[in-house]
Length: 154
Ligand SMILES: [Zn+2]
Image (cartoon, rainbow, N blue to C red; front, side, top):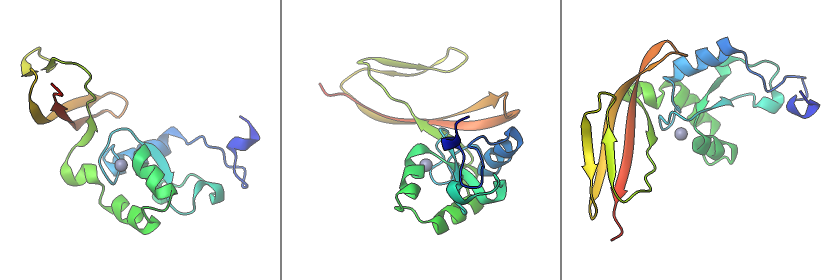
């Protein structure tokens, strides 16, 4: 690992598995602000450049968009601490992500091959489907909501 991956205290970017697991579980496996399942690890205070250890009590989970807003000071560290105390995924009971669609006809299937929705343009439709995923890495059933806004341009 190059020296640029270490901060002034010699702390590397590498975070131990147990520390990551604790952070993910406490956040409900999603971004603490929006519940998105795509996440990164945030050093709240001190920030990574000033941290001496990867302390899970001073870290949390953020999606890339919320993480960027925190980095750019659009979201304050105080708000991050508040969100860590009340993570969105635990409050709502599920994590989420957006389904990106680039097709004229869409058929969504559940795991049992039962057709859930068939979409034919022109139509505007918002879907919100909660499924329960067994995550073998986390050894937990994680409620997951797939949300999408489907629209036709014809
Ligand atoms: Zn987020």
